[in-house]
Length: 329
Ligand code: UFG
Image 1 (cartoon, rainbow, N blue to C red):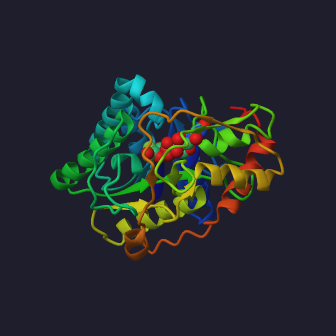
Image 2 (tube, rainbow, N blue to C red; image 1 turned 90 degrees about the horizontal axis):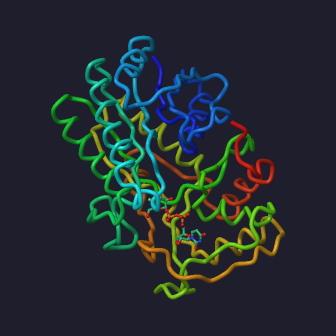
């Protein structure tokens, strides 16, 4: 039996697929390669190019391969773009998931692990954020992810499948091998943007807002290493294989770092001055997002190990300095 990684050519998907293959799993990857990269796919995984909105594509894949569980990363994930192109997000994230569930029900595949996000919470009620806190997204990206969670909940109820939804905080870092890493186009994430400065791709990095109610006035985020996220997906699959109930888990380190602290750590790691320019706030950014991951630790047995910001940025830098233009294909 195989594990199907949808969106396995993307950032978190490729790291999860790699960890699965290292653990000896038989891995099948499907990706439409719109935002994913062919060279991020592990060599010993079987790859199918196609789109989850295409029922016939999934129908054929599920007929050919014996899939035990699906890990679903196939979604658009840029918050800013989702505000200017909401229907693109509804189409891919929601319509794609609906078609996927239809195909899973037809082929009696009853286990799915799904990438959700801290963006489902919107402006947080409490810090650290618990899974039971209010969900009130402030952008279409978070809204589509929350709607996907609900689609799983009602489908689980009706069709007897089980799901785990993993709400990531700020995914970052790269595999220790230096062979895969983070590459978005356009880039909008803080750490890759900072590393473009020592790479000679930009003169400075912007700090979006210095008047937040935080100790140094800049936003605080919970940065979680992508390899720790990959481990959580594998534990979630095992949890479902052992008969675990459908559930939702936060994934973060439980420690917040400010934008200034991230830039300062990157200066240390890269030994480059990295000039920073203070600018206006970016619309829709909450001051603080820090997870409580107590539930994932207790129920899934998850234990994030790459939790120092220096290690996270060092691993990202190992990849970015050798791939200043991202992936070749
Ligand atoms: N930031 C800057 N300058 C930049 C880029 C970002 O100061 O050039 C700041 C942002 O304002 C924010 C922090 O750095 O305070 C992190 O920004 P990112 O864009 O890297 O990440 P976000 O916190 O906005 O987004 C993350 C995930 C999303 C998820 C969101 C939840 O990447 O998938 O958290 O709100 F939806």
